[in-house]
Image 1 (cartoon, rainbow, N blue to C red):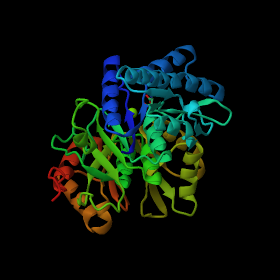
Image 2: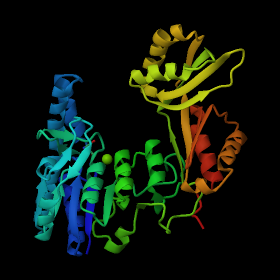
Image 3: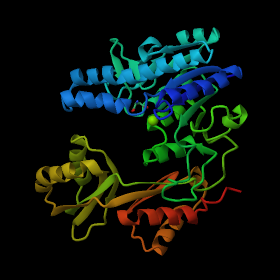
Image 4: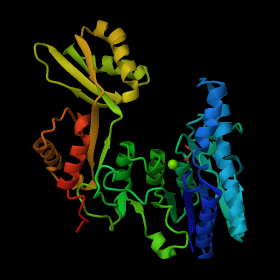
Length: 422
Ligand code: ASP
Ligand code: MG
């Protein structure tokens, strides 16, 4: 018997029929002798619907007063789905009780619409579990120290579930979702992408930060920090699938020390089209230039990803970096009006038709030549690399967007990701 946290996404909670299925599945786990805490998302579409209503009344009005009401509003989605699940469990003959974040309480800071969890009091939940109840805790929300309801950012129920699992030292946090695990790459791009049975949380962090939207990135950070065993698995299997089979399905996110990890050098290929490249040309090559350019960008609250400064020629150099594509126009405009004149640079040019492709694997730590193999594969496909960045467990390149699928497929094949590891 173990304490287990289940998390169900919006699709799994999308109708009363589906909620009934979730209840049957949870009841199966509880009847097998486990103590069950369940964290549901709002029914699919509900958060968007609610936020849409607010927008109708006051389009994106900034400020705390407005954001506070957005959280009051959006939190109702999870309150409703949680209560419905408790009702469905009772209808299955289980004892069950639901709690909103503030009732647990799940304490957060005061950053409305993107609050961070600070602590979770598990006394109430534990008492219910001890009485044989299945406890439902709303995802996505908490309460600040003034008693205001807060939410954790879109996709935040994943983080709620992991945080509850961490606080309660659950044996495992199982994230039921509409994909059946974490893949070597997006199966929509590479048909023979394989589901990974395990992936390290560091690799997961890299993949999540690069567009693999399986989990909210903060939930992965949380799992890593508190060492919560985390599993991503399908909510579309039949609820009465054999429990032992279910317990081993999906992808387990593990820690590096774990022996059972698959021994591939590269575990996955991540990619995204969310970035744009900006180059400041003809910059005088003297101290303080990077600080001046990137300082202005940071002051404008724009996040920079890759950075390159070229070798100088005749005392001038080019300086390139990438930003989120949505902030491209704003960044170029800011550089032209505020930075170019004082810098004595020649011009600002940019490209929004780029993409970033990355190979990810903790095995890269102990193997040399992996990055150069990546570059060779791309060159054999005639793909020009515009920027490169590396970390211990990842190599990323920026290339022309039109070669993205070609690059991903070629790399997937070259690193044998279509083959199960030996
Ligand atoms: N309901 C929230 C959202 O749609 C939180 C979640 O589903 O994780 O973003
Ligand atoms: Mg989600």
